[in-house]
Length: 371
Image 1 (tube, rainbow, N blue to C red):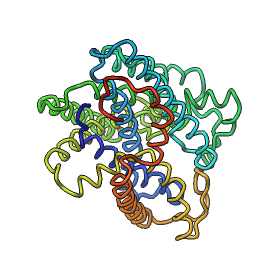
Image 2: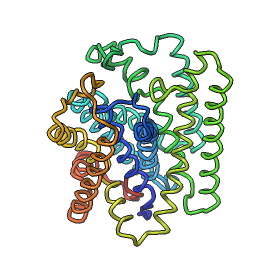
Image 3: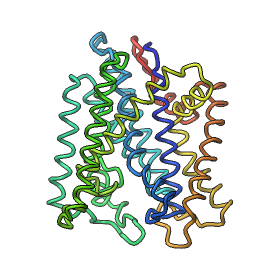
Image 4: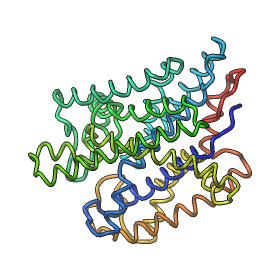
């Protein structure tokens, strides 16, 4: 088995912390708050989700990193495992959707299902496929109005449970629809195939992200300075939805920098207890995602008396960003403690164990790095 890289788990831990902030703020706060703390909370919007999806793609790719040495039977078994995991995540996500309408897991299952059929292709095709996914989304923008199906007053998808609405939401204009969000997953699959032990490769990845991030941030600021046409401004400054190209580039760039820094931290402070605890939290990303949207929102509701909206926009009294940030941080600390104790006893999170029990009944003879 290839040695697990601690930095990837640190990146997952960062992603889940960011999702705590974004989702608690969505449920009980406001993205329109322009105070210093409110602006800080909004920095996590999109970036955390991008890292979450990219790390998922890396996990799948790392499973089959040494695929050239795999037999046809091993390849078949790897494909079977990925397909079963994709179905598990899809089903779990649809169950969660009834409670949290912003669920990402059923989309995640869709990305993984696609990945199962391209596991063993040369890595350059992952980047090509990512570009194709983004292009398809932008073509669809000219065919179907992007807000079709949405009740924009509370950000509810009106016809999700119809065949037409479900397909439209899943493939085009859901929160994390396959087009274009699978591009992050495919980028992650490409990243999972490169040699992260090579310092020059890490530098190349970091500075690629850094340069694109600066270019896009510069473009955004320049567009405001030059007072571009409103439609162009909306396209350049789009934040999460719709996920236009500039948003995807800037969030992917931030992800490249963050993942590289996390790998450096994991190596530099490998013996640190804090790094180990955060790594354990990253190993339980699936469990921590689900529990913060169930247990977490219920605890928040109980403490504040605020009404949980079911994943729709908060229309009543909103809580201050300082309260949102404080609760998110405290809840993350509690999640770190829970993850550390659980991992110490069981090795994997409860949902991670369940997924593997369902999917890993056929294990390849050549086992790769664990997801």
